[in-house]
Amino acid sequence: MSGSTEAHRAPTLTQDLLRGIDEDLATTDELLRTRYPGERDVRQPVHTVYVPADTYTPDLPQRWGRQAVEAVEEHGGLVRLAQQVLDGSRRGPGLIAAPERAGADGADGADDGSAEAERLADAVDRKLRTEPVEDLRIDFEDGFGDRSDEEEDHWARTAAEYAARGLAAEAAPGSIGIRFKSMEAQTRRRGLRTLDLFLSTLLHASGGLPEQLVLTLPKVSTPDQVAAMVTACRGLEQGHGLPEGTLGFEIQVETPQLILGADGTVPLGPALDAGEGRVTSLHYGTYDYSASLGIAAAYQGMDHPGADFAKHQMMLAVAGTGVHVSDGSTNILPVGEPDAVAAAWDLHARLVRRHLQHGIHQGWDLHPHQLPTRFLATFCFFRGGFDSAARRLRSYVRREDSAVLDEPATAKALARYLERALACGAVTGAEVESAAGFAPEGLRGLARTGRMDDGDAIG
Image (tube, rainbow, N blue to C red; front, side, top):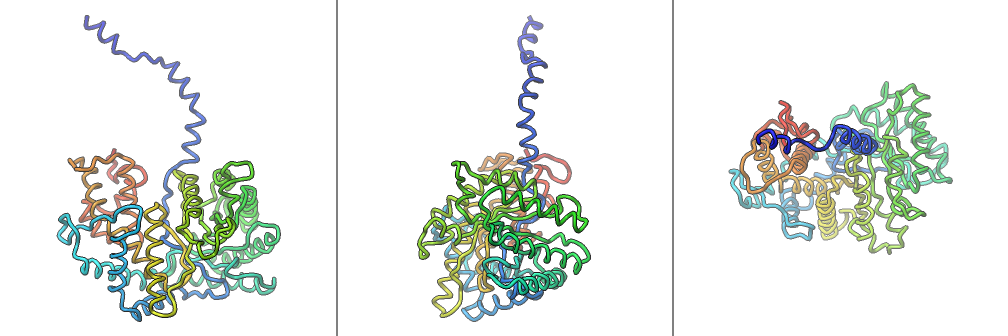
């Protein structure tokens, strides 16, 4: 009887059948391995600062940081602005209710508002003095406009020389590069010439290719334009003796044709394929895209439903690929009379909070006075959910009983959340270790592979 039971419980799927399934899914396995490798092991900046090429100097980040601090001091101080951002995050409007911040003693419950505002202001003050710009783009496109060839040649070389010096300067941005003119017929040759001159000058001035270099291809309408950029990158690599695949680039999504093609398909996926692994980010272009849809100027913005549709398509296209998504900008700047400055700061903080809630962790800034609300809203987002995320991850790693039953995918997302908070300066390594119960270095493995440094799986 026992032998009969064992035979009954034996697997019925034969090895030949299982091998057949493996063969049937070989193409899918290869697709998942190559097209959807997961998060890249690189830091995504919380913003990209765009400046016209003829206004860039190596000390720009430090200057912007000083101007940001001075602007806040002129309008009531950083603690006051931090309190306003905190109040805005608690009252909405937003996609989700703001999480409650645990008290200073680690107990559940809302923290004292003034104390949290002071901590938030201190963190942002440090940021503005040490790393006011995380990612800088020297603009030869809309921000630079149409100039004579001689003038653009001059600024392409000058910008490259300045960039080499800027990367070695105090408070240097984590990444820097240029946005050159598009692959459209009327600007193609000019844009590629600027890229060529900038890159050759930068290589000479830096003694090699800086790893912080980022290139931005604007106004992409078809995958063919991305393929053409790959061809240009190969030509530059061969001409300068760089290894194949060294040059990557961002795609700016600012035309409807890249969201819905003439054949009714979504060209974003084919555009990534055309990039042959070189595409690092998709950046939404707020105003070009909105204008192309016929949206009146007064209603163009990052929070328009048309913008949301495009950005959600972008997020779907890059999910699991390691390609980042960035939101665009607001052109309402915090300058002028006090009421106008306050309204612009409130709008900017709300828009930053909104794209963070949407799952987009990067946006554009166009003016030094936008830096305070960029970092206040970003730090508020991460600090607001920090205690809960750290506590849940701690319980997951230690396999403790918890009121929240987290799955492995959620645990990885929690680790990525804490990693982003730490990278931008919203929290410190000591705070992570105290709240999560392990060294911050463990976040990298948890977020990408599901394992701690000691090899223990989290799920």
